[in-house]
Length: 501
Image 1 (cartoon, rainbow, N blue to C red):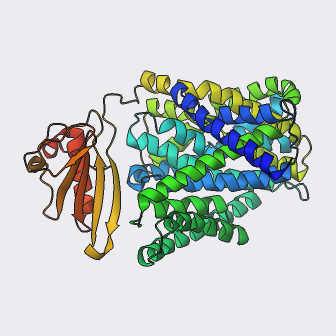
Image 2 (image 1 turned 135 degrees about the vertical axis):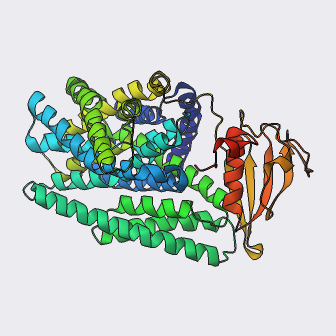
Image 3 (image 1 turned 90 degrees about the vertical axis):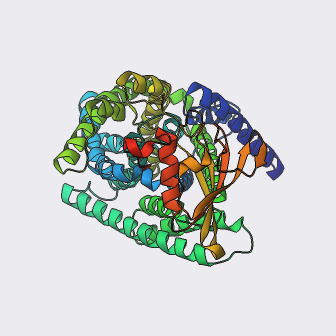
């Protein structure tokens, strides 16, 4: 085909994928299933486009995952997940290890696979998928700490699983012993963490002090910084994924110019990466070979969902409780077990042993593909129902405030844009009753498309957009006060509500 034909086909696929997101949003399905279906329709069993290059798929897949992880870090609110990080880290390390061995033992015993193949399957399936988790869970009214555990876990656990799959797929050497595995994994994670914790603050410092000639350059610079971290960690044989996520997390929670535009750009880049990644993986799959993988895939997937994931959650929570890092009740543990969604990450990881020439690796890829398709179809749409049945959903609570800020550097102040969500206790509160600090003022209200300058007695209404000018010193206090009133009303202080996320 000519370049113009490829461009036309690519644009048509992207537009169709964007339209399908609406269907996925209404049904509760992760959009990855529809994108994978597009790839299958375009492949050799559909329109006949050939693609059978696991090495290229692996490189494209890992790059796309880095973009998706960067968006996850940039859009994660640190105050939202801070208290959940200790448990999330245990789930991403101990939990991953437990899951690998439980699945490997079951596959080794039930499916008569080699020990190496069984361990690879366990490692490939150990990681929850950031894109799938973010796309589904951010629409559920979950307690902030529970949602934070799942989000942080999906951001952190890619790194150890990639390391594990790469080590186990090394056919030029014997399988690493436990000591070697722990040392190599620890080294790569430490290097990745060090790079991310260095690039993130340095990048934020530079972006706050360098006046770029166009606002559109700031989002590009932020995304480029995440790949500086990825490439730097990879060159030092560290975990590029951990470096990307930490860098993005730091940058996304720093006071940067044009932060709202940066988040929008990152979300768009992540959507494009998801569409390209899932369509490519659908092209790589061979539907005629899938029937033979259905039964073993269902067996391995059932073990993963009903045995390995619950055990890994239970042991991780137990360790966190013994170490006094936090408690998770039984209902929340059950939801954590069911909400460990698998998506593109396991399929991409399954290309690593295939590209390395591991015996039986094509069967592993097909098996993982079946597991992701079937169990995502089962788990994704049922999450709202499961959350309600377990009593961990909070449908009566108002969605939290959305706050965007644009720094006014010369004035050492911020311009906050606050959207008042339906059900917020801000509804009916007069502006003087907010008792904002002296360094802050509501300067404009946008209501039903019309804007006006409010007075002290102006009542705030649902769906209003408020523009608040606040000095840098009181900006956090303003956010906390607005959040507290939104949750408990103008007497929030009497109820002990402090607006902490």
